[in-house]
Image (cartoon, rainbow, N blue to C red; front, side, top):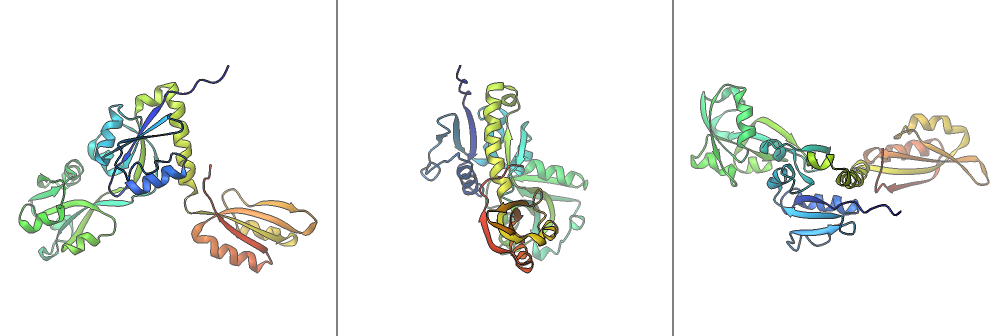
Length: 296
């Protein structure tokens, strides 16, 4: 009998903001193409012949949608998962969208650490839970002013003494004459799942397939496939020069007893040095190609 088609699952992804473009690129490489759906402001598209429904929603809503079972999977920032305090299962760190939730004050106030803050102060933030949790450790009387945007201006108009906000480079803080005094939380994009969906056999199979496809792309990021023809009498040096993921692969070359084909996966930032070392031991025909997917 033919194998039954697994029940479809849903994947919620950001419809805009700092994670949306990188998420779409990741899914495209994983074979879960969203096409022009996100750019055309569609709310829903499908992949894998309809077995995966991709929902375009606000990044901050994704943890709760996944927790409540309205989506089986989601891609959103760790900062939002922690802030919403939702009960979801984190399947993997996707290694993009890197940023930090930091505390910052107007530079002219001369405050440089949390210990310099007064006994009582007001914080403007869109992350009240993480902010409250952080400052609780310092036993300060903290008043939280929730805001949804333009956080950097709040200390300058008297709404708050300081802010907590996300930053990637710190340039926006500097442009607004703010100085960072503490790092509350590091964050990257995460693949999260609904715990109940993971216990459903039919859905779990498809969830695992999606997880596998995405992880193969993530693991390939920053890797290059290096190939070279190496003199047979220099092979012992290759293991030291090019350890790779599980050591280099060595193969015969038809009609060439004095040469061996060596293939190895290396980190992108090590490619030039690896090529230089290979050339130094007489390697020829050195090729470097991108790695689209990789499975550990």
